Image 1 (cartoon, one colour):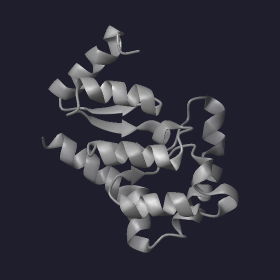
Image 2: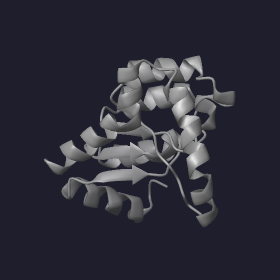
Image 3: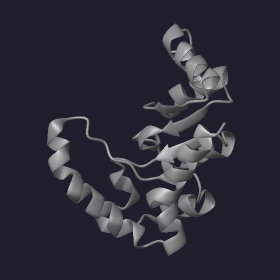
Image 4: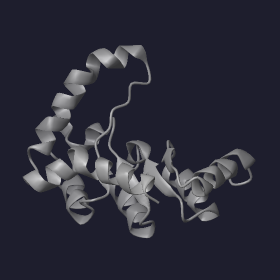
Length: 149
């Protein structure tokens, strides 16, 4: 909530330390955080988890310092086929998406190979340069650039 001091304190720490804030938040909460410190760099966990591609696009359009991580987003490629709306988002923002994993419970570790294979299936449906960007080069660039500021 916008009157909660903890999120505001976290954004201050991130901004002052030039840290990447890995926000597990829906779009509304993310925008509240960004309203307090629009200069922070945010890696948006799960691209909002249940947010629609239209909402993800709106956030990325409005906030050039937000990157979207795609862990546990099965809607990107239902049944292994890359959704055309997600594909167009990846093409619109080729440098702002990255894959991710989420191993919030120990049993997820045993599922990790299967989850990564599912991601590889839809990555192969993209042009090689875009697939590589989402697979690893965007993350590498984000981490490298943030450590140099």
